[in-house]
Image (tube, rainbow, N blue to C red; front, side):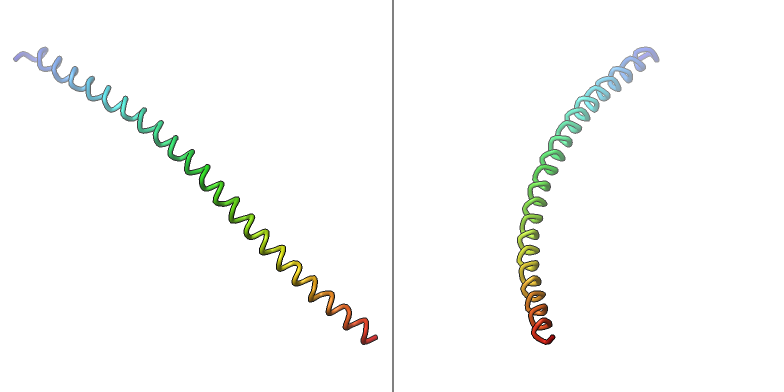
Length: 80
């Protein structure tokens, strides 16, 4: 086998390998973007639920503190 024939075999093999790697890297990139975007959406929904729950808890705490503050104000007014 001459040098030129060997070079042709190596170059064609490298070209085929590069084509396969290129195709799968494009596919991998698209799948990765798809997975990341679905993860972002699901995490956003979960975060929204957590914030709503914490908002409800904070509302309850605010009501409790307002009652405590009102009781303290009433006792100060009675003491005067």
